[in-house]
Length: 363
Figure 1 (cartoon, rainbow, N blue to C red):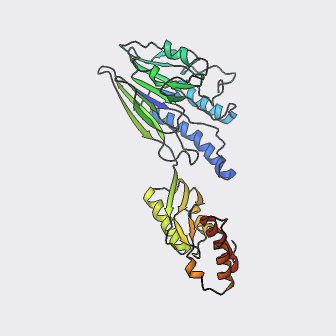
Figure 2 (figure 1 turned 180 degrees about the horizontal axis):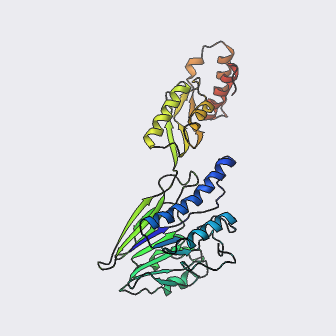
Figure 3 (figure 1 turned 90 degrees about the vertical axis):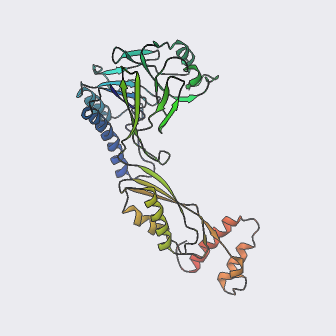
């Protein structure tokens, strides 16, 4: 038996952080496309079950386009059973006034169990601040079954004494769980639960911001009922990847050499033209070094879907170089260096801007 475990698709996400309206709209459409492609993958690989462990949507009120696409996709694939556990972002139901499709199974605030076969059982519930304790103590899977349990939330070792919506792992150990299918954390995590089972976050299906860098996808479960074994495999599936790349520009004295350092860092990270990049410049350059970050950004933006450049590098000043300089430049540098209220980093920034102005350039 095969099962896809996915979570946190966040369909209808605004995608506006740093993107133009056109590219934000494109990314929103791509999230919807990724869901369709996931279902198509399940059909091609003969996967009869898809578990969505929360946050299928990003907003309580999904657009008609998003809700219709999900509803129509589900109804168009009666050979696949969808198990939908609502997360903290999801609304009451994307189907609206329409009947719930027969191949869509949902969960409530008490445990609901579905028999995927005679031996494989899937149990899930929506957690909230007031029901965590009761849920944890009322979970009683059969020892002889292959038990899958699904929840959406942040794990902790123990129950939140304040009544928070956390998942206390200590209360789930020793309860004959073979696979704890989780949602809420946007990166892939796989860890041992107890001697019998594991817990797993598949992460989000597609990264949306630079706090979601790296590889994203879903988990494919292959269950051997006779041997009572579960094989879980992470499947990369995102169409685009997000990268935060650090480039140390220490010693670079021109825009060309800085760009070469950045390109080398991008190459090492294995970035593709369809990816989104956040470039962070670090290190230290001489205060008189020439560097045009607008030019660098323009060059890279023509090569990748989206590029953001953040300059965290410092400007170093050698006082000896200006000690005997009788020009206006030397006087300016000495005046800034003598200001005890400024940090060394701030002095470098001011001097760098001032020298540009003296050269007739934009600071």
